[in-house]
Amino acid sequence: MGFGQHQSFYLRTYWLRKAIQQLDNNRFFYEKNASELIGLGTNMVKSLKHWIEATDICETNKRNSDNKVIHTISPFGQIFNEYDPYIELNDTVSIIHYHIVDNDEPSTTWYWFFNEYEKKSFGKEEALNDLITWINKNYNSKNSTDTLERDLDCLVRQYYTKNKSDDPEEVIQSPLTVLNLIEEVDGRIFKKNPKFDDIGLTALMYVLLKYGQSEISIDEIETNKNLWGKVFNLQRSEIVRAIEQLVNTSKYPLVFDRTNRLDLVRVTLVDPIAFLKEEYIRKERALR
Image 1 (cartoon, rainbow, N blue to C red):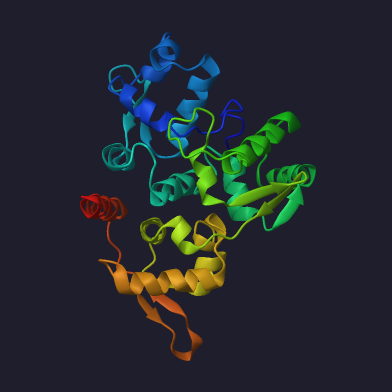
Image 2 (cartoon, one colour; image 1 turned 90 degrees about the horizontal axis):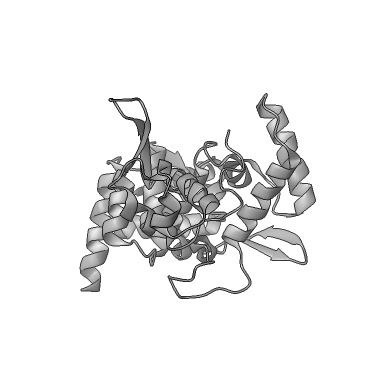
């Protein structure tokens, strides 16, 4: 489990790029002057350490010489840094979001909210009580109500703002707001249903490849944890539309079998990171 590790700071648009620039020193986040070097407050540096791990921008390992924790850029982090460090593509935003919610470590509340929580609208206190009930049912550890409340507040602010900006250097903006996955109205939270092209076909295919099943039904894509319906709030009609596009446009085309109402999708399983790099190279060439 992981709660409160964000120090109440949601991910900012420019943070991941700033972090990667420091990772030549694989012990950067443990340096006494890290805050001064990166230009963030002490608690923001702790928060950034959490977010680079949660988004799979970096990997954590133990150094052989002294067994101390080190951070190195992950394969996804290398692709991110080379092709979209300013997070200008919705595919990049969607993959970052997917990495945050695809495991109950280190962002357990985020995992619960998108994979486990079935309600489509709710008040904050209602969601807090539901989160506590789920934790008590599934884990032995006890967590303070204040910590869990801060988690939910941070989550909402990470995905929803009333004042969006197109400036990538906007210091208080979260990149995840562009996905329009939630909305807050009069203190009540609503899960929103985006269009598939708001998420991005590259991101959707990447998620299928990460799931790792060569045959999967539309029902499973809609309802299984870590798949499109849960992670991106995609409705069945949008899932079908996205599948139809991937049948026609992907380099590794899906096979969509609708005979006898089976609605089965057959996936050519390739390495997700290799696929992702090919896609970003293709996108870069298309912009030339």
